[in-house]
Length: 451
Ligand code: PLP
Image (tube, rainbow, N blue to C red; front, side):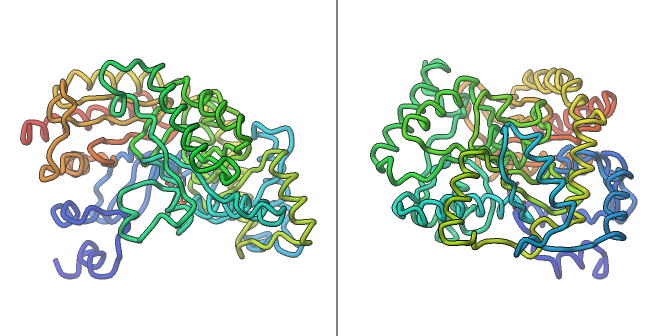
């Protein structure tokens, strides 16, 4: 209907990251509110959101404590910046809390409004340190193919995805190395250990080819999220860290998705056995209740950034809303809820059920891989399981599955030919079963049509 919410959306909204043929086939879903882990549309239909919004609504959609923390802070002091040494008390409290819960003994925190800006800021910090300290050639940033670090010009350059070509990206100085997806990238007959050794050796030869003195940093998500939930082999990060240490290259953990519990530990780096020099946080930081990102520098980078700033008497970077007091109050509450009110415990408690239900779907002839950790997972659709042959692009298999799921009351996300699941941390065992029942029904229906 011409005046429907859907038509008004189509007429006026520029959709981001939306497969247009699949959108045209099904139409948008316009939502009014959420309860628990469910969202509700303008027609009164409900959907279990297996994606926690975009990985971030980990406390669900109607957490009273988070809303109250925001309201109380709006009443008290609704907005302030953190320039010129003027800042809110909440900004101080949250910085202190983040250093306390970080893997670092000491550090410094810089706030942004998003994960993209936090990565952008971290890169600028490295460039600033190296430029001010007389090493302007030390600029190159290494990330992995399939990584997702954001969409600003710098963070999109770190994001090594084919669509960046449409923007003429990456910028100069961004180097991309192999993605640690053993199931897809492992060579025939290659053991997981040999795969890891090959990737570490390849990273080292790339560093040597570029010149170690030109590399400013290596960024990695502990588990690649938007790359399709790529869980690296356990030996991968220790091997990568050894190479980086050899050439004194900072390792930055992009914990925008993994941070605050998604993998079952506070930080993803804890789950994968590495010690980053800095952490990028966003999303779960406020449980999605306020747009905010943060760079958490460990002691070495914090000292280097201070030294460079002292030298020219200023760190020339900041956003109007850096350390916004409402965002800080919400983040303080979110961290408390995740760490002290049982959310991270629930991730750990339900991870085995999540894993078991994912693994059971591997019995389907068109599911090639079921991968995951904690409460993040992906199921890879394949046309032929033995040869790992994907479906042809004309099938749009994962979009089709996601659309069928929506029709069946489940929101989940297609990524490549995989279906991603990352439910809110408050999910219950029966909701988990319901989620997988709806998914299984949708998979059976679609595979019957396309296989
Ligand atoms: N880093 C990672 C690992 C992400 O998954 C994302 C977003 O999904 C970002 C950075 C970018 O965050 P934002 O969308 O808040 O800019």
